[in-house]
Image (cartoon, rainbow, N blue to C red; front, side):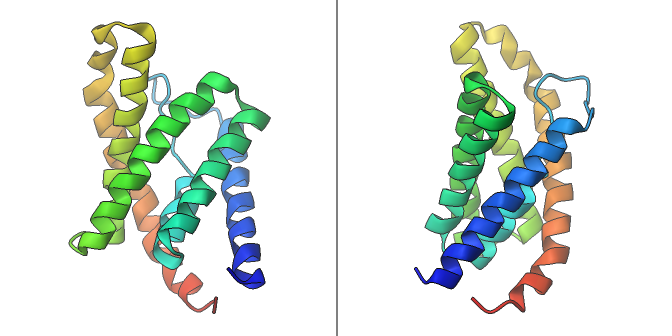
Length: 164
């Protein structure tokens, strides 16, 4: 990795952290516990399309760990890691297939993120009643994933002009 690429990854990690912090400050709720806009995922989706997958994955992990320690707690980190890793793997798989647009990949990421977090919630509370959140979380994942995907689609041409 070149120095320029390392600096670029650091800037993207910092930007994702800033978005995570801003999102924590915004009193935005859908009335469903754990549902957020996922502003930091704009950075992750873009990183997936402009960097090698392993570098985008490191940005994802660094963002989750740092934001959890700075603005959250340990349980937040476990939920975020479960959702973040699952969504990242799904997005990488779909991106490599070249079937879906950046918006479609982002939607799949949003939905799978919620699936990962819901799975951890079911395991933690050891009660399947938590799964009743599934339909609401899927709708939230579709909506937020679509919004993030549209924004990423609009921003990506600007980033493509940056020579790495």
